[in-house]
Length: 164
Image (cartoon, rainbow, N blue to C red; front, side, top):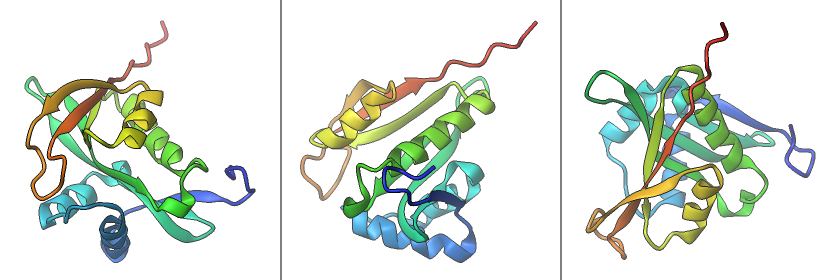
């Protein structure tokens, strides 16, 4: 399962005892500070929030929130997905996102979405490779960062058909 260099990439659940790893990653990766609700949502999502390790070094994470839609269906919101710059391009982000997409499929969750700053071409192109589409633009979504606008990227997940 190594990515190009024969080094193991592994995923681990986020728990109280390693939550500080996620906090440190977010500080290094993102221009915004996340509040306690973000971390509570990340912890309560269970398998949907993961830390990524490259050769036992924590280098990336995905943090999701499970949301109930009207009618009771659940959808997944990717709050953050990031990999430290020196470790990008070797499959870590792909492994994190694929893990989450697989979970959605297994749990019959039909929709997953996220917000991306409109000038973040690298992220937009990354998600498009996985079938995400820009479904909306929200003006002035972010405060204190420029540009303040974001795209909503959404992916509808095909549910496995039950065999007859």
